[in-house]
Image 1 (cartoon, rainbow, N blue to C red):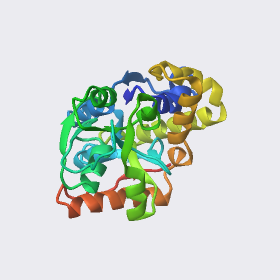
Image 2: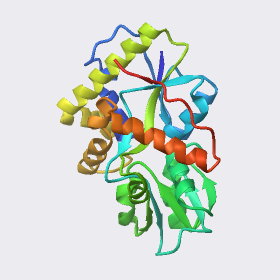
Image 3: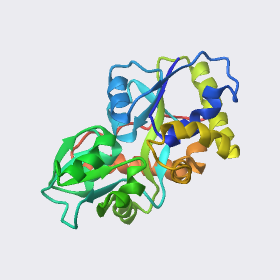
Image 4: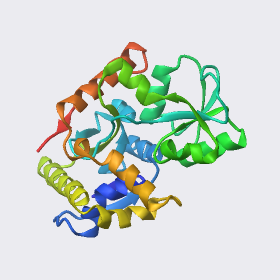
Length: 269
């Protein structure tokens, strides 16, 4: 099986048990690590058996993939932010975004009526803002907690916007498995992934050492903070409130005419 995740501390943290052999499985797994928009686009081509996927991208891929109830990245009190070199209105600005199909980009489109997106890799957004190549930048991953160290200010907090609208956790990323994978194998993988998440949460320091490979120069405490922000109770098994959050996200997008609301096909053990 080709199993793909992003080069980020939270994904590395949750998959540590599986890829290190600490969580045994009979499945033959080949690990792929690429940024989230690359994985979204590879999923469109059907190249990956299991992949990290933006909740946004799933709306266009539900015929090829189903959602795994383990592995979701959910914001709860935090989420993507828009930053700039100085205070300014968000509207009518050139904003660097980490990919067309990222959920952060969808949330920004829902929150802001008029802006000009400039697509780039997630790790290029913050430097582009600092160089003045864009007016502002939409930050995901660790950038959402490190931007102040780079002299930037937050001009829009998408968590605040989302929670004000919904009072729900914020859906961002999921793990998805191809529909043509046999049902028994889907369930076997899901069980192994759940065990991997549990192993990481029970062996934080050990899993963190592995996650540090994807720290991009961040110190250990920051990586730990970020990993535990996005690998949590929601990641282990998706609760009803997170299912509702996905439904609400898709309803909002449908009302805006962005796409038709997809059926939520979630595999539970």
